[in-house]
Amino acid sequence: MANDLVEQTFQAALLSATSNLIAQGVAAYQNRHSFSLDVFEFFKYVFYGILNTPPNALWQQYLENKFPSEPEGKQKSRRDTVSSSTTNLVAKFALDQTVGAIFNILLFVVATNAMNGVGLGSILKAIKQDSLEIYTSGLVIWPLVSLISFVAIPVQRRVLFGSIAGVLWGVYLSLVSLRE
Image 1: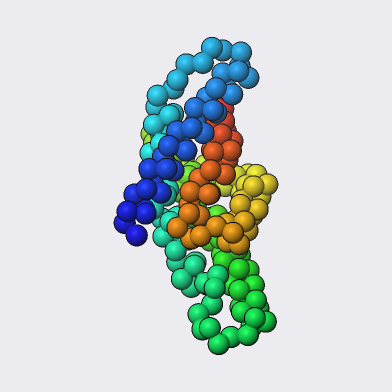
Image 2 (image 1 turned 135 degrees about the vertical axis):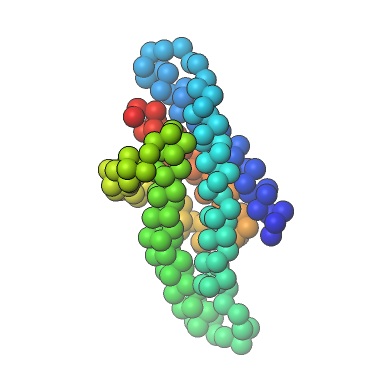
């Protein structure tokens, strides 16, 4: 597990770097400026990828352990297995889209604002101001990513799959952060 976690964290950091570079390039293009790397923003998103990955990998492992895709017990009929698998899929999906989403949004808002040197009062204001917008914007991508992940991706590769989808999401978050 430890080696998987290190590998997943490294991959996520690279993908966070990629999404921020793309976002900075898009922002420069939109503002009709030549590209100039904002090193602080770049490393902020690399650090966020490193910070965000371990709890998400543990979360995915917890969901799979609690609600296995393949229920144990070979004596179960195909009908019972499908029913159990469907119930577990719905449970994982519901928890991921509520508890998991809330955790990730709060971590993002708190971490990025803290890295910007913002005080606690401003962080609490940002949580109130930005969380719902981030959540509703995320409904465009994360439910589908979550569903595909739970149905077709092995648990040890779910964070990588999410990180790849997160490149697009990271571009969006970086652009939101850059306009503030």
